[in-house]
Length: 95
Image 1 (cartoon, one colour):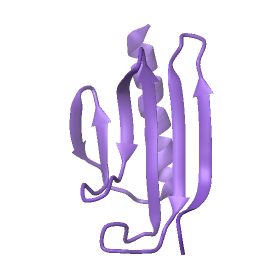
Image 2 (cartoon, rainbow, N blue to C red):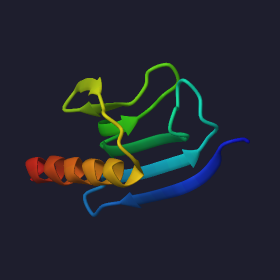
Image 3 (spheres, helix red, strand yellow):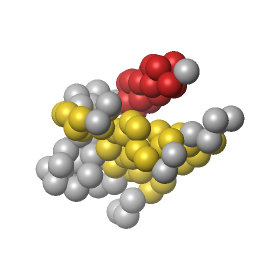
Image 4 (cartoon, rainbow, N blue to C red):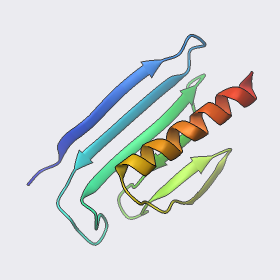
């Protein structure tokens, strides 16, 4: 089985920020035990402000406020909820 796209959504906000969400179904492996690969990002002025991903060899993690930290993946619904909550918080802080 090769990677099968499940979600791909890209939106530009009125201030030029870009929110892009990509999720694929992949074979379960040690690196992806739940069978998903994902990349969720908020970009502003050509810079990643926020991101959640599970890049090869790095496991589940998020990039938030200039720091990279582990992320406790509990499913796609929770991932989306957490990401969009953080996007709203970052946008609020940007004014």
